[in-house]
Length: 586
Image (cartoon, rainbow, N blue to C red; front, side, top):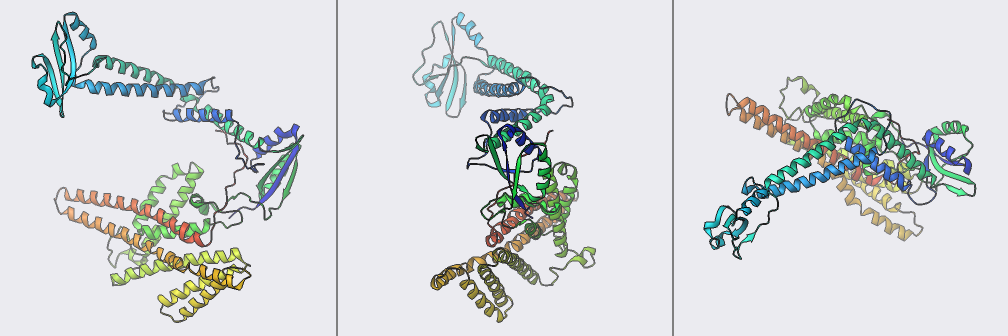
């Protein structure tokens, strides 16, 4: 549910400003509203320091942790860490460039340019040239000491005595300043320098906890400066406007008694735009992160968490559609319990995936789908099967299709009912009721072959047209109603969109059956290796299938909520509640 907020005004004198703000930040329950339209920003110097510290933490995070601890952080540690890292990157770039040059010279073998100087002292000149294969004959073959063809080009080492051989125009002289020996030496020197700096970074890991504390202190300072720069100031008096959860008002008033400040708490009125704070039971709260993927509900809207928690679980279970897959997901989550429960976000993921896993097991059990294995009538798992019990496969498929349609109709009906509650007592609630009657009237006529459905369809259409607008002009009201009625195609298209639940679930089952059949076929290939190949094919096949099924469950399960469902009852105009609070120290 969306937590009720109160409007807050805190004011005091300029002399007490710092003490008041520090106390508010310590309590950490007030969402500050900027006095101007500018975004809350801290001092530039603080932001730059925070970026440097964050970068240093990121650099040290790539090294193995050390159990030793230190109490003091030496001066310039942050700058040293960043500088060492930048220097290592610079050396790596130089090393890569040298390796490229060495690779280009590899065709000539290992050599040193210092050897050329000795040759020149004895009147021997060495030239490295490149010439096309067609023009190779223009070179004096007697002077070619070594040659190698690469594609349509020939690379050659040309020797001459006393006087340097004059190359023909077709030959391109390759300038070589350093040989592979010199390049190897430079590469080793750069590697040695990198190792030395890496050792220094490894030794600096002991400062990581202190750097994290410094980062949090800078974040607190940045937020303090940002709030301080956005106060309402008039001579020696300042004021701070914000919002506070209703349940925290008493705590705030009690804690603020230690400082000299005035506090005014008011009800939120129609012109206010408070932030949105969503608090639900921990299992429902696990879906809040998914809700915010699309948008945060406005303060005056409704919390969609409960509806998405239930609907998304059903959609995910229908798309994955296999109890065996649900058991695998459940086992993975139980295996990751320790890691996931170490953080608040991890706990939400853990609870959500447990819910989805159990949903898959339940739906897979009632549809009789366990790794797409054909079960005999005396199988104990068969007693849980409710869906797909007809002897006709075609009838079973039709029943699953109809189930998807009814799930969509019920889901969209809930959206209409929610909208009726939201807009009541304005005339628009009758418009929404008309759409609801019209939808079920069409279902009764088309699917149930009930003539009363046509009457309901017409009645609903009349209500939808007449109450689509509250315009005083009857003619304009009627025209606006007709325009609203054009949405009937979209409404029924949205219902049919829920057929993806059937289609994706069927695709997952068919894929599982195919991999099972492939596994049984390869088993007969060889008495020795056949069983091993069977296990590998079935394991890899089901692994791929479960990954695709889970991806489809998330993507399409959320899509049905965010597009089809939200279209009729949700605007998402809110913004998150972010209190002016200190970061918890490490």
